[in-house]
Length: 266
Ligand SMILES: NC(=O)C1=CN([C@@H]2O[C@H](COP(=O)(O)OP(=O)(O)OC[C@H]3O[C@@H](n4cnc5c(N)ncnc54)[C@H](O)[C@@H]3O)[C@@H](O)[C@H]2O)C=CC1
Ligand SMILES: O=C(O)C1=N[C@H](C(=O)O)C[C@H](O)C1
Image 1: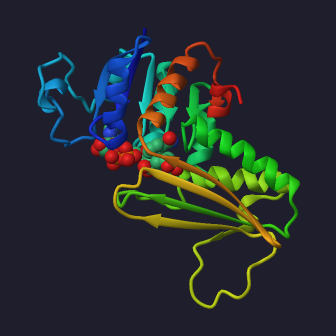
Image 2: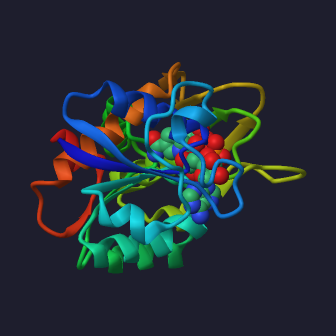
């Protein structure tokens, strides 16, 4: 049994992870972590959820959580995940990072932690999205810039980062397929008199509202036809399932920063 600590246990993904770890035959919950000052700190995890006590006290003590765990699964925020990558590496605990919204410095710090620690990081942990990323690269490679690429994503009203981590993965795949660098061609959220579209641009658009879980379209708009690749997530369980699979997979890997392509063998 892989002992898994959950970061941000009261969050949307934290709660889903808890359910799936409890259902798993291969993993067991070792620690439930929340931010300092959270109402749940110091209370029994079962009791705060309105059930029977289960003997796991919600903690903000990361060192303690790492000490009793083989993996820590982390869907929180960049300011949390970046220092955690270093701490988990130092403790020899595998770190699964589902958090999105990192900047270049954050990504460099995580890559550095991956020199001594075992990390899986992915802006989307689902099989379907990772397949879509592969297809996006293939199609972008096959088409020239007569086909305009636009990425449209929709998420719930609470999401704090845009474009989504998934949209950026799709954009990077499209740029790779075209043999260009995404920062040089990305066109994020047009507004005003923008002028005609730049040839070769990769456009990003973000819808925020209600309880969308996560939807992504990649549009290749060409002369006389459009190809649209679409992924619709209708259950957060698919992200949590991927993350738990990654935590188990990391137990037999060498140090390094991996993606879900590695975990899924894509
Ligand atoms: N890679 C993927 O497949 C997916 C990634 N995400 C990403 O995961 C992140 C979290 O998303 P949600 O669960 O919707 O957010 P959320 O806001 O519901 O949950 C975040 C949780 O982290 C906790 N937290 C904050 N600071 C902490 C700290 N220092 N220590 C421990 N816990 C701390 C918060 O109190 C909260 O409970 C976002 O970046 C989102 O984009 C979400 C779904 C899938
Ligand atoms: O914040 C979310 O909810 C999600 N975030 C990830 C992203 O930024 O792509 C993955 C999924 O779409 C849900």
